[in-house]
Length: 277
Image (cartoon, rainbow, N blue to C red; front, side, top):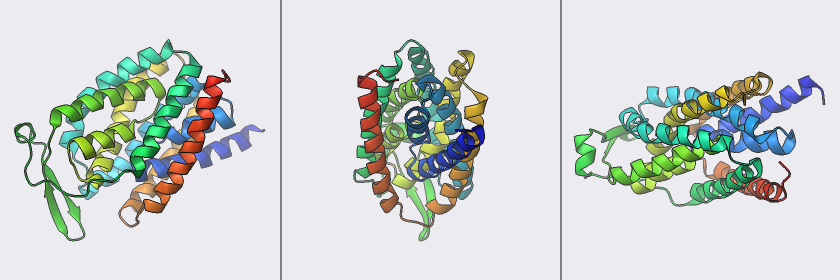
């Protein structure tokens, strides 16, 4: 395979990763890492390094549009970033000393979890009464809909903060945005409307990934020849996804996405178990 063919395929795959990541709030790493390791047989640590940069690009591309539309809860995102950033640095340090096959098996398990979380019933209702902590930290907010502005309140702030720490560890360890866990913390634990959860997750993914990317950069696990086309493709996909989110029902896309990542998860676990990384 020539370098031009490699770059074009990588660009197309990264575009798809950015599109799916921005529509589902999962981040682009769930597509980028299997593409690099299973298709191009890139060392998983370099794949994680590129995926972290992809997550930063994905978050930057989609988050700016969602913030402009007033959907993202920036104050909540910055508060929860305290937990995810600490976890991400810890996870990145652990990853350096973890065998690649173990990382592959863990990654496959997280993919299966992400698929299950994508299919579960989403919280569409806005709470009218929040917890005392949500008022004290001024985390309650509102978001625009076609029927007008909808106000919502938060519950279980402590539980959401704890899940975010775990999301940060997995992000640093596996090079993914941990969007599934972040959306789970906000949607199920804190009872935030789903659209706000996914957009705030997108906003947070870039900050979390940047914290762990520093560790991978210091260890020399970032190859410009891989990372640059991945960043360009993901950024393009994220911009397209942010335009589509407000117009389309992503239900069909999510079913297709779940089937695809379940298949990829099985591949990652099988290859990791048989020491093929």
